Length: 387
Ligand SMILES: CC(C)(COP(=O)(O)OP(=O)(O)OC[C@H]1O[C@@H](n2cnc3c(N)ncnc32)[C@H](O)[C@@H]1OP(=O)(O)O)[C@@H](O)C(=O)NCCC(=O)NCCS
Image 1 (spheres, helix red, strand yellow):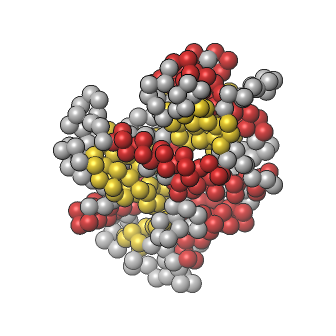
Image 2: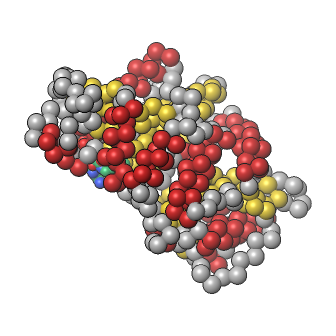
Image 3: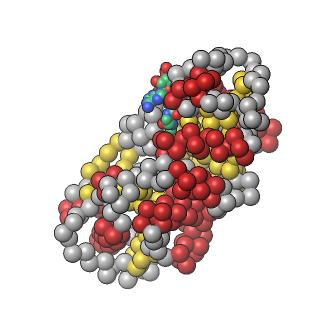
């Protein structure tokens, strides 16, 4: 069924025959053909289809970690074996933690929702809204039956209202960012670069730190439920594999530097930042490309201000150096710790700006347990959770 041929006879989104289901492989390919117009960026259609297929096989997504969804009309006659794709999205299963109001901490699954899409010709008829309503209903029912998913996250590019109607509320959405200097000589001798072989140890250590944090109550209101997606190796590798594919298609090479790490000479404690390159513009449009920190970790909170400042400067310079090497014009870090933000602002060489995101990449949470989503404390709400 071509889009134009069917647009005139589209079913109502409130029709009882409208269902949320999983696509066949052919239907799934159609969802990619539809949404590559929006998210193909610098990739050719063939590269985009190859990337989407590839993304099903990488960490986090492999072994049933990803589920594709379509909204379709159960009453429609399939054309060439395919049902109409009225809207589509996917969910990614992520390891997570919940600290309940009684102080107990549990390992759970959370679902990230991604790639919410309706073909242009089908928009404004309530299909995406219906899909989110059904998806939320499905997740909430699963949660009641099995306890999971305990919560869901997504990153809205369409403002605060649409997803909030269906329970995904934008919570903390701040960032600091700075423009990459073209002429600066960057001394990065205070840090070491993070490569593939360092990731497993750092992710393991980070998970321990997140567990330690989750064992504590919220500092302001001890009765708050706390949730965290775990920044484990799979969660990080999903970004790095995806990034490598895009870089290879656009530049013919893959990044080897995934971040930078500072070690305190006085205590041995570490500060590190992991980052990815986001090439929305490809090599020709560096102004659209940026480096995003996936995770920024301060291993020991008692590190002195001076050392933290040296760490932040070194890690930012390393990110800037990579940005220059990969045609990126900006560096950003989401929801930085207050002390990291202060250190960044004090380091005047970067001219950082503090931004509260209003429209794009709004980290949004849907909590399925007792109590309201707006009362939940979302710990380590950083870019590594994006999907
Ligand atoms: C966003 C999208 C999925 C909506 O699909 P749809 O089937 O038309 O959605 P519905 O008809 O259920 O709802 C449309 C609502 O979304 C809102 N909306 C759509 N695009 C929007 C945008 N860019 N910014 C803010 N709101 C937007 C509409 O204003 C409308 O609001 P209303 O219900 O208060 O009238 C579709 O426009 C799309 O695929 N866009 C391109 C991809 C995209 O941006 N996806 C979201 C990624 S987070």
